[in-house]
Length: 568
Ligand SMILES: [Zn+2]
Image (cartoon, rainbow, N blue to C red; front, side, top):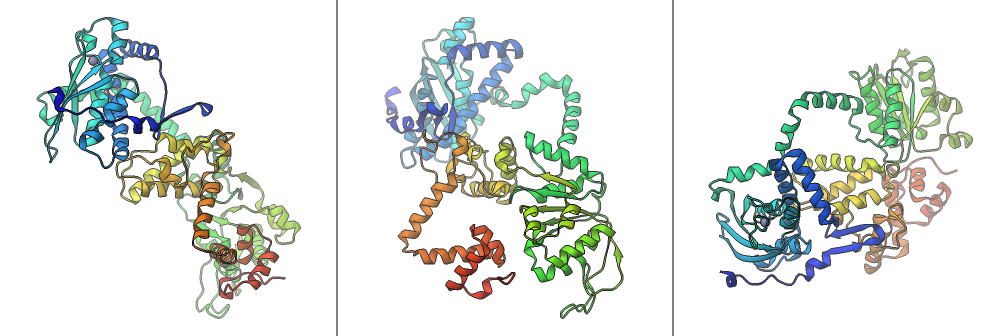
């Protein structure tokens, strides 16, 4: 039998996936972070588990631990040896088992029929670490003891062939046998599959908590009540501070001003504030002042009387009236025209408004939440914003921190977006790899939560069905090794920044793009992002309005792409 199977192929490719980055305190196997355990630690852990949970539960836990590792390696296997024989690809599992020091694996026989309706595999283990650990602690066992290794073999083969496979030990060094001998079959091919499968059911541990269950449920409700704040996700100190400030403001009608960079989710905080307030059953109306042309903003906010101007062929409600009884969220409030600022001030002072074109004054009861990423004090100094309006808005100011100051929320947020986009794109993914998560936590996120959402969505699209989201799916331009020793620390990583910029520029140069073309493309795209508003486009490009005006005059960009104030 033994000579029926070839030897394992060379293991070099697998070795190359194993990287020791001691300067970063990390070990990697492909995308997975690894840890070097001492077997004495495993021995102590096993003893504690057996003593506190009982033998059967400890066996179940360790079996499932191995099962997870096996599944991960099956994903690696197919990528590592894509165009080789079944045996060579399959060997990645046993070889990884050897590489990680669990046992020496000797293949005896392996059969898989074409339609995957029959699987049979027999292997032997020498030097099983689990047998060794068990023997040292308890002496010879009556039953086989290589639980996590059996879990590994089952998890690996199940994932590998796509059908539930279960392995068992026919003999075990822990029982005094010379070697462990294991046999695997499809679950339906074992007569006692149910007995074997019980170790793979994760809920077995839960019965320990049965008597505590009601208390757990109670606790969970209290916690979710405390933590629930609209759709907001987070538990970092900075997030909780903002949440608490908003919760305190929710019950009153105080005007709230949200400050913070673009993409930090000011709109979501405003919505959550509304939902936490007594007005939650009334409308929440959001207006992005920068997205509405200056000459229309007044009509948009305060409504129009029929005949007020050409095109106003009927009276129309403004957003203020629509939000009556509820909350109005004015995003980018610094972009309001001088006239609109004046009217807004009156509405805030008197609680009544008049539609554009006149007519009777109307009472409105609106809770205002304003937001900006501008420095409004500076805008006041420069005469672009009314100081009396600023005082009205600045009653209760809350600064929403950028994502880089909420690193501890990244795992929760990433999970939230993973769920959201995997259902949106109809793709099941098995979480985010350790390496990818490390990069997510290391990146600076200039585009904040919005950028994180985009990155995760891209990851979902690129990940394989049923596989995990890997580093390259999130940051396609990252070269290996991702973390160079020269990086002074995670905070200095800028992945999609520096690296993708270089590769984008290379590509443009290869395509013969000139500097002039590049500049025009940049300006056109920025104008597009700013809805044609030249002042905002200048800000996006990091230029002054005058400089952008000058470059526009020099360029061939059609005038129709530009809107906004005439330059003065
Ligand atoms: Zn064994």
